[in-house]
Length: 198
Image (tube, rainbow, N blue to C red; front, side, top):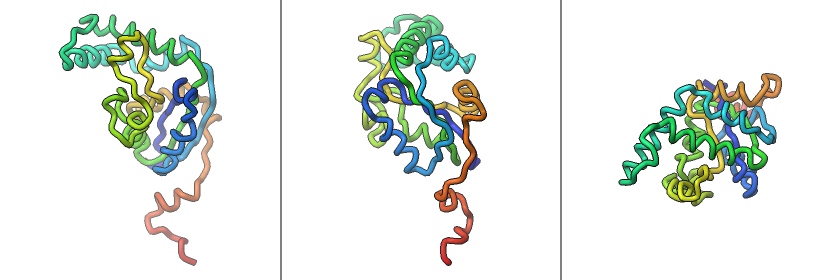
C-alpha cells in the first residue's frame, strides 16, 4: 500500500494560470512522494488514448452526463451516451493539446483516493472549498456547455488503482519513474518512529 502510485496531469489551464507549484504543494503537504515528472505537448491521438484507456469510458461518461442534465431538469443534447462522449472527447482533445501539460506520478499509501479527495469533483462549481478545483476554479458544466468546450478544472487524477497503472504506463517509461527514499517517509510509515530520539 505504501508504494501505491497515481497519475496527475496539470492541464493547460493550470500551467497558464501559474498554479503548478501550488498544486504540487498540496500533494507534498499531505505526504505523497513525487516519483516522476515531465512537461509535454500531447498530440490529439495520444489524448484520445488517455481518455479511452478504460474501454467503458465512453459509455460511463455519456450516461453520467445524460443523468447530470436530467438531474438539473435539462434536456441532454442526445440520449445516446456515445454521441455525447464523441463531443466531450473532441473538446478534451482541443483543450489538452492547447498548451503544455505537466505529467506526474505520485506515490504513497492510498495515493489514488487521497489525490482524488485533494483534487475535488470534476466540476469546479460543485467542488468543495479546500480542494484544488474548489479553491482555484470558477468553471461549471453549464458554462462549458454554453461555450462548447471542455471544462477547465486544472488537473486530471486517476480514478482507480487499475486506471492509474494503465495511465502511468501510457505517459511514462519505467526508467522515468525514480525509486528513492524521503526522510519524511520515516515519520509517515515507521511503526515505532525508531531513531527519532538519540
